[in-house]
Length: 170
Image (cartoon, rainbow, N blue to C red; front, side, top):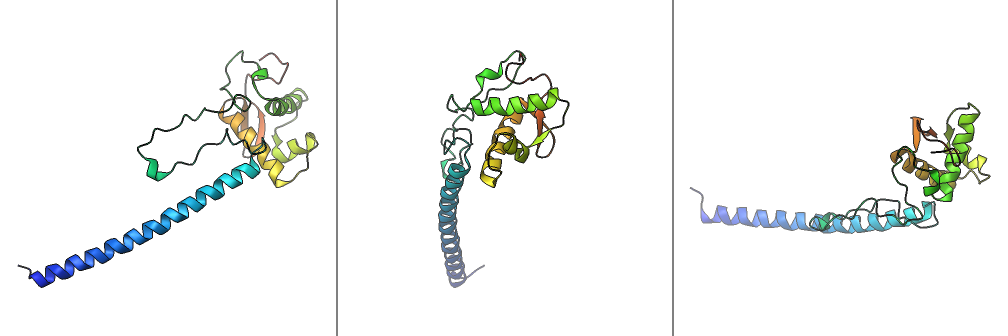
């Protein structure tokens, strides 16, 4: 049988531990908020459409566990990339995406291999700087995810099977 004094010490110890955990959670909450703000800023800087982050997925806040999730495909019409299917024309894509498809279609017609994003930037006459390359990589990855492009090796992109470039019929 434990004494009231031992029980009191145990309660005090548990309260101290609860206070310590609560303080750690408050620090983690601030860290999370700072990280989310920094992520939004980086997304705005690296966004291919000059700050339009409609194509990027939102950062879920763990405090919003009961909130309804926003649909992942809720992109603005200009930046929306539909899932590729037979007969879907590349004209449904924005000009930037069509330009990527055209460059890869030209490579395919010339029987040349896949392109890296640095090579694409050079082909488009862009400065080959990290921000431009990452913007292209983001778009290329989105096209891969939606079935328009294939990535046979990491960082190397080509048209997916069945897809042709703008004006190519699919």
